[in-house]
Length: 210
Ligand code: B1M
Image (cartoon, rainbow, N blue to C red; front, side, top):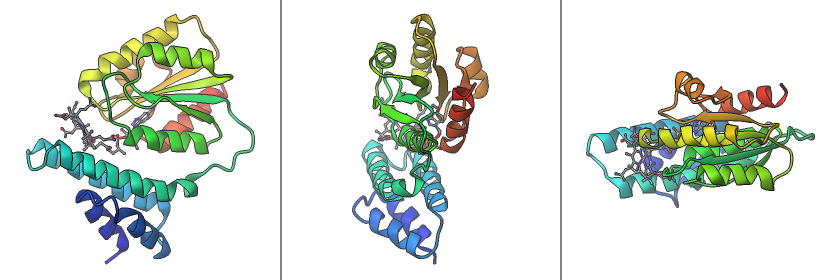
C-alpha cells in the first residue's frame, strides 16, 4: 500500500505528530508533492462530510486541520518559486468572521511561488485591515481574499467594496474559497476568481501583468 494512504489515514485521524514523517516517507517512496497535497485536500473533504453527517465534531475537525498543516509544512519547500523578479506584493487573508486558513495558506504558498512577495494578514481580517495593508506595503499588485463560510460571504462583498471605494489604485482583487463561484465573484466586483490554489496563482500572474 502506498504511503499516501497512510498520510490520508493519519490526517483523517488528526495525528499531527505522525503526518510529517509519513509525508516524508511518501516523498521518498517516489510520490509527487502535488499528489500528496491533493490526497490531504481530499481527506479534508471527507472530514467535512463526516462533520456534516454528525459523525465527528469541531475538535476532531481541528485536529485533522492541524495534522494537514504539519504535512503541508514538509511540502512547502518543494513548491518554493524559482522566480527571481517580483510580480509585486500580494496581500492575502481570510475574511472577517472566518477562521479557516488551510486553503488560504495553500493559495499563499502557490501565489508566492509564482513570484509575488506575500503579506499574509491571517484569518478574521476586516475590510479596514485589508485597506490599511495596501497603504502599509509597497507595490501591492494583488489582494487575495479567502472565505469558507457561506455566512461570511457578505464580509467578502464588504471587503471588495471597501477596496474599490478606498481610492487606492494599482492592484487587482481575487476571491475564492469553497462557497465562492465565478458568478459570485463577478457580482461583488472582484477582478478575478479561482477555484483552487494552483489556478489562484495563474490568475494572480495574469492580473498582475495586465
Ligand atoms: Co469548518 N466548516 N467550521 N472548521 N471546516 C467547513 C468549511 C464546512 C463546509 C464543514 C461542513 O459543514 N461540511 C462548514 C461550512 C458550511 C458553510 O458555511 N457552507 C464549516 C463550519 C460550519 C464550521 C463552523 C461554523 C463549525 C462550528 O463551530 N459549529 C466553524 C466556523 C469557525 C469560523 O470560521 N468562524 C468551523 C471551524 C472549523 C475548524 C476551526 C475546526 C477547522 C478549521 C481549521 C483551520 O483552517 N485552521 C475547520 C475545518 C478543518 C473545516 C473543513 C473540514 C476543512 C476545510 C479545509 O481546510 N479544507 C471544511 C469542510 C470542507 O471544506 N469540505 C469545513 C482543505 C482546504 C485545502 O480546502 O479551504 O476549500 P479549502 O481551500 C481550497 C479552495 O477552496 C480554494 O483553494 C484551496 C486549495 O485548493 N481556495 C481559494 C481557498 N481560498 C481561496 C482563495 C482564492 C482562490 C481559491 O483566491 C484568493
